Image (cartoon, rainbow, N blue to C red; front, side):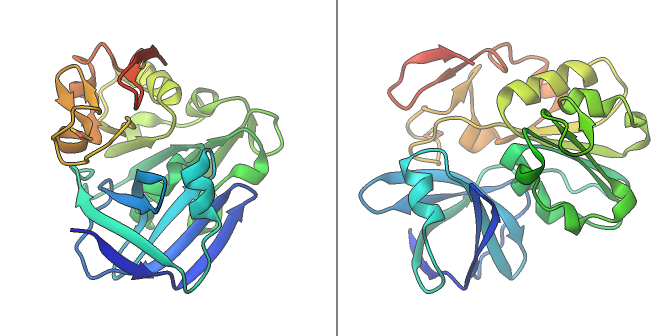
Amino acid sequence: MMDRIIIEEAHRETPTVVSLYFTWNLDVKPGQFVMVWIPGLGEVPMSLSMTGHKKCITVKAYGESTRKLCELKKGDFLYLRGPYGKPFSNVKGKKLLMGGGSGMASLRSMIDDQSTGLVAAKTAEEILFEKEFKEKQFITATEDGSKGIKGIITDAMQKIDLSSFDMIYVCGPERMLKAVFDRLKDMNVRAEFSLERSMKCGIGLCDSCSINGFQVCLDGPTFSLDELKYMDEFGRTKLLASGRRVMI
Ligand code: FES
């Protein structure tokens, strides 16, 4: 069932990213996603960047549907169904939240005193949610060197003791996920990754989100490091909305 919800606040985070705040009386856990309907254009899956009583989606404009979402204002309506999918495991203790680009959105609701953020972006102006971390618990890498370490997320990983964390959560473009996975796969660490796939139904019917026999909408979108070790399509191929399989 789809809900029509009024937007209480629209906040521009970066030149291409907007957060839309609203109240929705449903229990949503970090890592789960909702299907957002854009009238005339269809639905897009989005994770929530706040999961308490007040909720939020953080949208990066990269196509027609997401551009339309980024134009919404306070008082406009959002059309949502969900929540769907397997949430991140809720682990007590030290957490490392690794986000690439707008991937930090789905990790934001897990920020607390025990969490360290490791955020990578192309430029400084694309870095999300820095102020929500404690000052000494935030590390950045930018490709152009405009903030933090010059390089990509795996360059920044070398600066920290990864084994000191009780759980590592990772979200971002799949190439970044794969690069992080390759660094972690032989280490004695716990990690979970949030995968993105083309999604049409969100509820296990259409198979547009399949990867190695798993459906990302039902079996994911969060997968553990150990699960990914057996998924050879991860980081290599994906299905487009048209059904064509392409290299990542
Ligand atoms: S989105 Fe349809 S089966 Fe996953």
